Image (tube, rainbow, N blue to C red; front, side, top):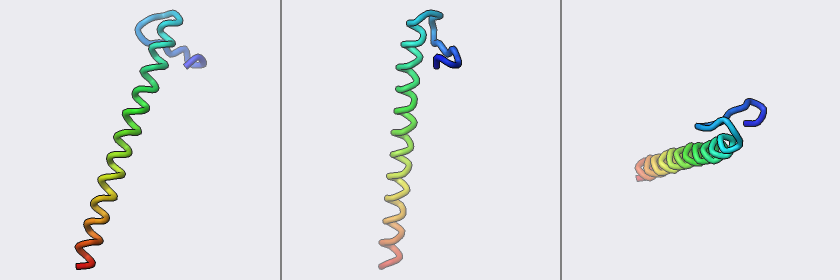
Length: 54
């Protein structure tokens, strides 16, 4: 953020602070969604294997 000069809402140090927290929050949301998608894929894979075994 410092190299690019990215600030959110304000043009001083508070903008960097807000941008840092928002960047971490967005990264956590993406990682949570990715985890849910992987979990759903695993459930489908195990359900398919179960059907194939029967």
